[in-house]
Length: 364
Image (cartoon, rainbow, N blue to C red; front, top):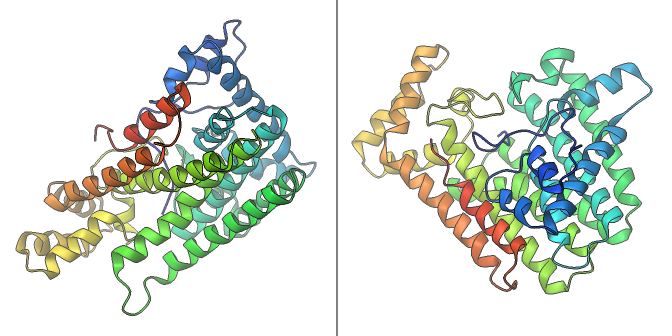
């Protein structure tokens, strides 16, 4: 299960650190995703967020630099390919719910992005994914062993940085790392005997995606000395919005569009990765829905040819269970917005709300 975001959300890539005089121009140069774009219009929040994001980019490159030429090249592979930096952005935004302590907040933002990057190296090996962010994956360039070890190395760099932030941050990182590993393990082995497929699937994406998004907001609030109830809000919001956008990403895979990661439509179908539309399709077929059974026969068939894959994608895209999958994602996004209710009205709250809504309002 890969982790990606919506079409049209522009990457922060090499050389994208802002150098404009107007802070709002800086925020625009960083190309904040929909929902978050309104941050740039705020005369106080915009400059602060854009400055922190620029510092995150600088520190990311410093954190993965290595005197060993091979380790340096492999570690830079995904950083240089760009990325949305959603997790660091959530860390920075959450810090504005208290009194931002910029050095610690930025360091925490670097930690969560490094952790995310490390999981991508491992995920791509597990999924045999040929592309990531529009280019060949690390294991395609250097082989599986080098890619796995590079992920481990980046995890190690994240651990060094988080250890400098103190015991509470280290505990959050360790528990998040545990959930990331368990999520991948449970996805690999599948549901336990008698376990509901949908329950298993939701628990996997909560661990693999929701946990790190939740930790991102949690760390930002903690290092801003925000009240404990605010920290708890960010944990709840992050978990739910993380699940929502992984659910939405699964639907995007069967809608017939490429996304900005370079992942081709139907990749999950071809790799037989369980995703929400297929899980719902199987339920419908088991319940006697003949149209679902017909589509399932295509999905479970030989998808090695591009023609067969395109046919399965088109059939699944047109089936009502795909719309039901969107509805499930929407419910998780709505729950994320509801989790923000205890927060007072602010630009930060508006941005978090808009982001949750943007996750499942993508045109596909």
